[in-house]
Image 1 (cartoon, rainbow, N blue to C red):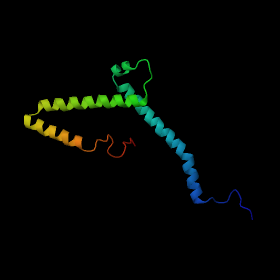
Image 2 (cartoon, rainbow, N blue to C red):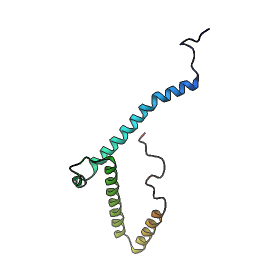
Image 3 (tube, one colour):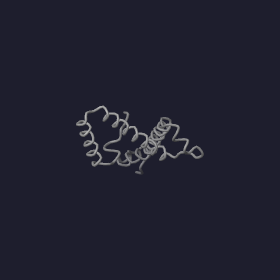
Image 4 (tube, one colour):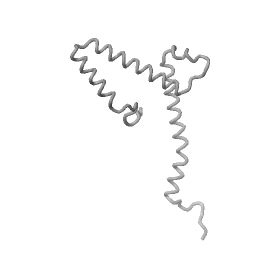
Length: 117
């Protein structure tokens, strides 16, 4: 007897087919999330950065680099303002902590990515 179209498929083929159908959809959603986040960063950055390249379109890498620059500057200002309010002993401890954390892993991502769900 010849196999019919209603015959049961092999479970491994079923999983593979499901994966092949889902992968492009999941990838599209991932790219949409990335693009949305980059647009939000772009809107949050100061206009002074955009004046530097007013004649050309900013690439995503440019926006990310500018964001790192702004956040680094804000972090330095925060540490500076906190160190001005502390006693000399507390400032010394803060400086030691900054030096030790700098020597650790310099990777910007230390663990799993943040997911809002």
